[in-house]
Image (cartoon, rainbow, N blue to C red):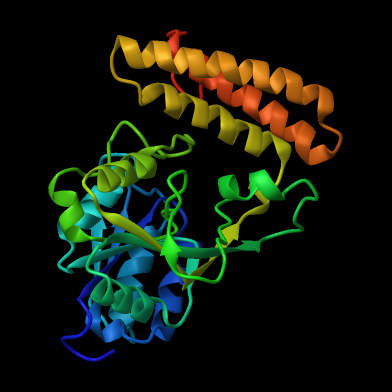
Length: 310
């Protein structure tokens, strides 16, 4: 990657109590071409395991052709951790990796060349391949791939369709997009709570300001999927918290009425779909959709429960 032709890059990795997986991700960075033009920022979101010691040991051992810094973020939540990484970054481009993701060797070069050649691009993402800890369930296909962060939009470079955007396991933005808005603290994962929606909110802001969001098939990572998530209970809980996140995003009385109207339409749709679902995936999808509806209603109607306490 020639000097001057590619913007400098900050790789932000947010982590919470996953030191073993994080170590594998950090070790994988050594294979990246162009790493000498980047920096690595590990944001520890108040871990209680040996994350701090492991990162300190990794940095002291050297062998990484880029400066690597450890940042501790006291405020619990993925949005707070990402914002801390952005604040600490020095690059013109901020690229995010999950603490259990392994990037392809040309990951940095693809990001850098894309932003250099496409000045209209404000953000980009790419393929995310699953790395299953145990056997993939038969029902995990089609509509369930995105909730498990499995992404493949084909082999051509293009803009993301309006209904989709990059995922946090593999996304990059120009740092300038955060001049107006950072990740919203009320949304996004907090500890073990499966809240979401913060990425959708940021990409909505990018689109509203006229920025383009590019999909590049060669911006690839492998993403670990633990056995603990490969069950119906987890995916139903994931949909429930998606419903909570949808309810939390409303602002004002009219948006609340609109959301309730959409939710009522979803109830009707799922009720009809239940009559026609013939395979395991279809039946589970309808159950998950009902969990999403339940989460939305719990939030909008103010049932008075903290997320995750049921």
